[in-house]
Length: 335
Image (cartoon, rainbow, N blue to C red; front, side, top):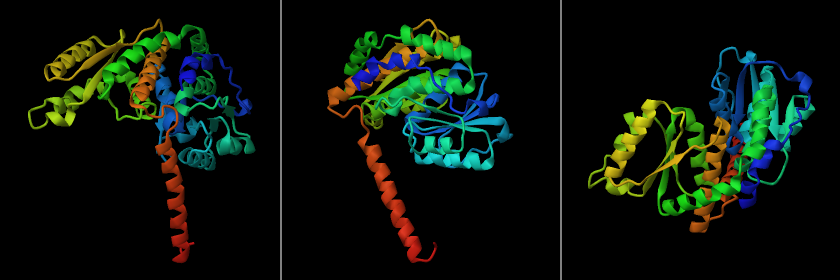
């Protein structure tokens, strides 16, 4: 896991090849279907390019959208074997909508190649999907045919310095030991806050939550207006505020006031500013701090940082349960 973090910037130097590029249509509306780490890049891309019409789909089947044929549908699965994403790709193809795939291989690439659909094969460096975020961003930019974004992403190979951010992550991990992280950001940076949460969950193996300003000031905040009988419910919360120099001035005020109210009620609040010359640098520098924080928390707790054994166990149990249901249906004559 440590090596994947230290080498993360190198992913942005990758030059993706779109197979069957002649079938890549020039559309301005997109749907990205994927699960878990394979669909973390889409929301980040949407945050960077808010003018783009990008719908994220994390489910079986297809979303109900108007003018679906005018959208470019992208199936994203790092392994290529994600059940929901393969279902997505098959249904899109059956509908006759323009569809492409991005993966390291597996059934998804086999499906796309057999039908000569546009697809991109991500380098299989044996890292976890959440660690392949650079590859995913570059691949999606290639599908969108956004040469400016591709160029900006490529600069991160030389602009990002993962090793230099480890000290910040290690210090934050020490402050978070024994705490449940709650990550807050401005609405526009929600995908960054969500990625922080996921890294705490998957790498640190701890519960973590996220929310956004200004919405949380109208509801969630009141859940921490603790009294004697409710204090123990949230006494282990530690709030992380992801602040950005481009945040709306009113959001800056809301964050300051909210932090003051939380601290007055005994909750620790840590401000983690986004630093960098560009939106991309700020985004990925922040996510690298999250990576280091989660890794060092894993070491403090003695958990397995890289693999996600509970997810793998869940997948196996789903297969077993599905097979038993099929056998039961056959006995009853349903098949």
